[in-house]
Amino acid sequence: MGQVNKILVIDDEPRIRALYCQELIGLGYKVLAASDGKEAIDLLRKNSDVQMALLDILLPESSGLDVFDMIKKEFPQIKILISSVYPKDEQQFLVCNADGYYYKLDSLSVLHNEVSRLLTARFSLEGRSLS
Image (tube, helix red, strand yellow):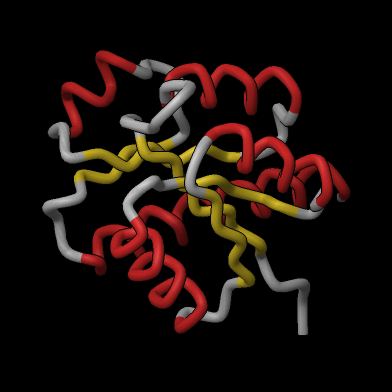
């Protein structure tokens, strides 16, 4: 069996963070969780095998936009899925170069599909480059 994908959930709302972690673990992913940008960057520095971050735009201390920029600069290989109460078109306006967008009012099946799409695309591209 192949490597299990590791996802970092970054959300300051404990209930939302726990829900996302529970759902992603239930789908077979390894999951780390952070409540703010500093904790997220610290976790990424200690876990080089993280493939994706699920990032809330509204975070305390440093904004989700700042955290997005830090991750893209220091960990460019990590896919970033923006998660917000803002509709997707507003998310795309705020963070135009994210890998994907999840509107928190959508069902969790939409989240599952986005996560799967991003991680499948990542491995499809890697597979082609290795052949």
